[in-house]
Image (tube, rainbow, N blue to C red; front, top):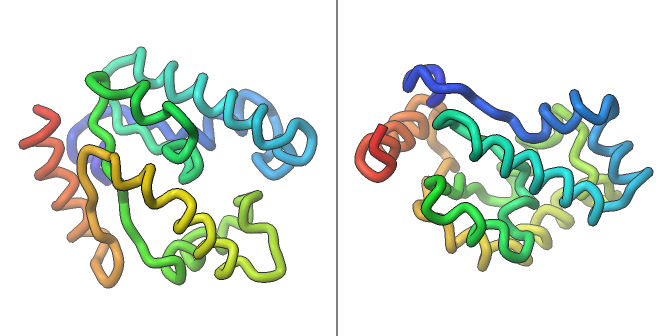
Length: 152
């Protein structure tokens, strides 16, 4: 919605990877492992940053990789869309393509992942709380940030 309202390209990094690799992310993880997936992911984020100004949505694990956020400083404005583990798990469940959540206890795994990643997420340029807020409210916050902080 933010990209649409800014009339900007939207890059869903996971969708780009699935299209280019010709297989779902869960299969990439299973066949190549997480390290190989993260290398592909980092390459696609770099490619997106090299193009026209865009709204880029990397997966949740991207920002937690060593050096990922530092590599985009000055070339992009990173926003942490913060949600409780319960909310994040519910949002991920319908797609069923989150290899890090394939577990007997997806909520427990999400809590663990958020705890592991929180320090990295907090280094984003801004944080927008998404719990108990409508899509329109979150979009409005992001549009304000785009205008004020990122110069759109």
